[in-house]
Length: 100
Image (tube, rainbow, N blue to C red; front, side):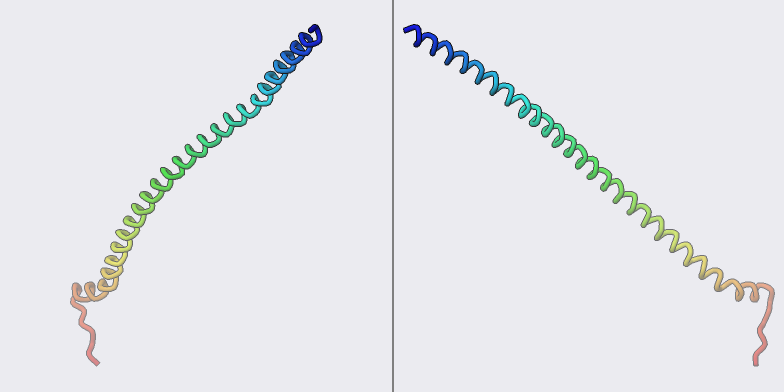
């Protein structure tokens, strides 16, 4: 009977040790899960920031393209004015080219 009680006590001790070992084993897994969750959250934040940056860049690029088109139109108009300037000056001063 004493042997049975000793075996039972040993079993209870072994069971307690097993529970402690299991808890010690699970602790790093819990930390790993927390780290992974933090990484996934940061990744989601970065994805959101990237999407916002892309949206802003697209808006800026569209605005720059509009401004560039306006500048091109002004330059074309100036080119036309400059091309017609010699004739306009000649007319203004009354110059008449000789007819050959």
